[in-house]
Image 1 (cartoon, one colour):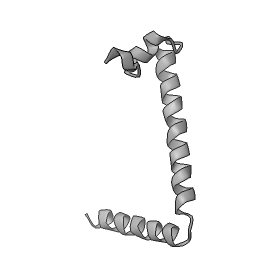
Image 2 (cartoon, helix red, strand yellow):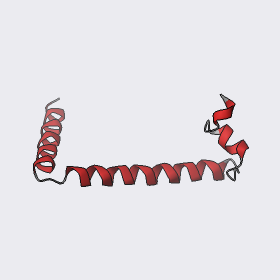
Image 3 (cartoon, one colour):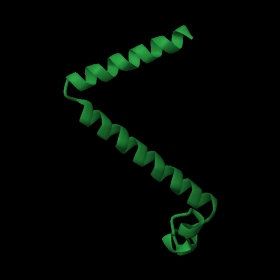
Length: 69
């Protein structure tokens, strides 16, 4: 458990350093961009695996079709 506390302490210090240096918004924007890119790659992989080309059938299958609710 000691290492868990050390990791949390290091995370707190990193957050404080980023916050006080004025880089927090840029840091969070970068994380958001990375997450969006990963999501898009994942979605593309799912579509390829299921041979879905983005039609209504694909959107419905992935739970993105609002009319299916």
